[in-house]
Amino acid sequence: MLNLLAAFPIGRDGLAFGEPGYVHLLAETLKIAFADRRQHMADPDRVHVPVAELTSAAYADRRRAEIDFSRARDHSAGHFAEVARFMGGEGSNTTHCTVVDADGTIVSTTQTLQSAFGSKVTIPGTGMLLDNHMSLMDPVPGNPNSIAPGKRIFGAVAQALLNVLDHRMSLQEAVEAPRVWTEGGQLELEDGFSDVPGLKTALEVLGHPVTIVEKVAGGMNGVLVDEDGWLHGAACWRADGVPIGISGGQSRASTESGVPH
Image 1 (cartoon, rainbow, N blue to C red):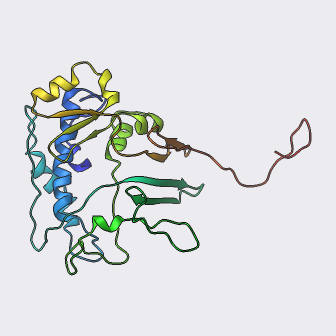
Image 2 (image 1 turned 30 degrees about the vertical axis):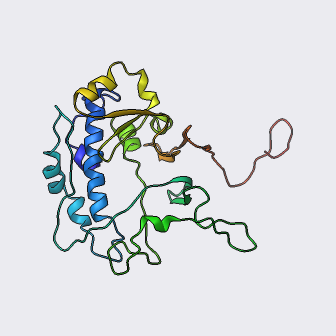
């Protein structure tokens, strides 16, 4: 997605956040990216996935030419040699944590049940529910995305990255900003876009069937390291999250009370 968008003027010197042209561009990019995702998603450690081709500048140039700023289009997946087809899906009800320490070490972890109560099976004696994320996999053995230990699934933060890098938002503004979602078909706009005059109508003129929704996907959090080395944490309104900073090292005595703090 970011390769596709790299050649377009976005942000301060181009398409502004929330204007019809920017939302249209996001929608068309999402369609292309998720068409490729449906076709090619698998764990590249286990099967051949054309990662180099999908992330190449040349491929982005080819797909970018399919975007028409005058109308919405349907987009199919790109084709590469020796790659099989498979299917995937999306879910909700996720807990996520991102941590960065003073040395710049980053740990990101996600715990999710996929849908309500997951598989509805608990581990005896623990009360812990098992998820049903195998629904994202192919139940037939021997295919690229077949169920097997150690495989990975992905999450997307492209819109937040664009908000920080191109629209010059703070990290908190970036994770809170209204989102767009489509894989084709309905174009979902979060209710926050309702404040943008004429946006829905302009997108419908371009051919997008627009639906206003309360929220797109779940909560987002993140940590940003600025140019001076300061850490900035953020968590958005869509979930029950909060940024915190924890300091280590020796405590120092208060000059007023002598009590360490």
